[in-house]
Image (cartoon, rainbow, N blue to C red; front, side):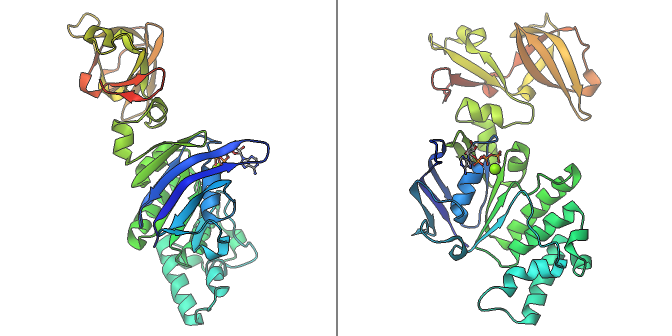
Amino acid sequence: MAEIHLSHLTKQFPGGLVAVNDFELVIPDGSFVALLGPSGCGKSTTMNMISGLEKPTSGEIYFDKQPITKLPPGARTVGFVFQNYAIFTHMSVAENISFGLRVSKPRPSGAEIERRVGDIADVLGLRGMLDRNASRLSVNDMQKVALGRSMVVNPAIFLLDEPFSNLDAAFRAYMRAELKRIQHEVGQTMVYVTHDQVEAMSMADHIAVMDAGRLQQYGTPDELYNAPANRFVAGFVGSTQMNFLPATLVVGEQGAGNGRSLTIGIRPENVLLVPPDAAGATLAGKVNLIEPLGAKDVIHLDVAGHDVRVIGVPGQRPRVGDNVGLVFDPDRQLLFDNETDLAVEA
Ligand SMILES: Nc1ncnc2c1ncn2[C@@H]1O[C@H](COP(=O)(O)OP(=O)(O)OP(=O)(O)O)[C@@H](O)[C@H]1O
Ligand SMILES: [Mg+2]
């Protein structure tokens, strides 16, 4: 097991692009941390530097306070699973999973290898397939084999770079839950890269949100959701995106703006729809579009030219074209400074 400390980690590629910029992060021993951000923000580059596949331009990486930046990948006791599962298609499932043990020095005994492969196969539900040729597996099972290959050598640090993005949705949800269970059971330090905030929120103890090579916020899923540090995090985290409105619409009345240009952020579930003439309605809008999602509706309103999303109850669905009033819960509103994009106290 190991704590990972990324200190001022920077990677500039030839040609000038700074893919990772002064990245500072401490990943506690035994925790499950997600690196979350949009495509191209530097997630894989960060992972490749942790594993040793990529050399930082500057900065240092520590495992358990020991600098390892100059160590080659093989000396880092890191397990790595990529988006494109790398398995040997000419080998059986058992041979694939046992590969790391068979080449390790000292090599465990045959009985020991068999026991450890069996344990991993049980965890991953591959027990009945151990003798099967890996090329004849489904994509889902191939990714399980790739996981098993990394798990079997029991690395202190387990790095997963979008490992489930090629899997179908139902199996992805299943593997998410499985991986979280396995990590809690084994207690390895796990770093998981994803651009999917649902994936990060559902699995990780802590999430590091990245944008354009820079760390935006590091916190628990609840902290990111309820107290985003800036407008980027506020907009990136949350299944139905947060609404952003010019603050003068509401805040001007409370005097909190003081002439500063602000944006108000309010999550769709914190807006209540009321009849247009109801007392207490802060804003008026018109229903533009309704997305029925089964358990809930996402209702799109036109509010003074802004698209405002509200979570609706399917039994009380308005009609497209209806005029409605909006009530905001003042305790759930967030404010962002338009100059810095940082969250400010209301
Ligand atoms: N070898 C390289 N040479 C030059 N530029 C690179 C190289 N590898 C990555 N980049 C650039 O660095 C930036 C970060 O890339 P990276 O692969 O780390 O992003 P990512 O967050 O993993 O994205 P994705 O979600 O698409 O996998 C991108 O702009 C990418 O084009
Ligand atoms: Mg990537």
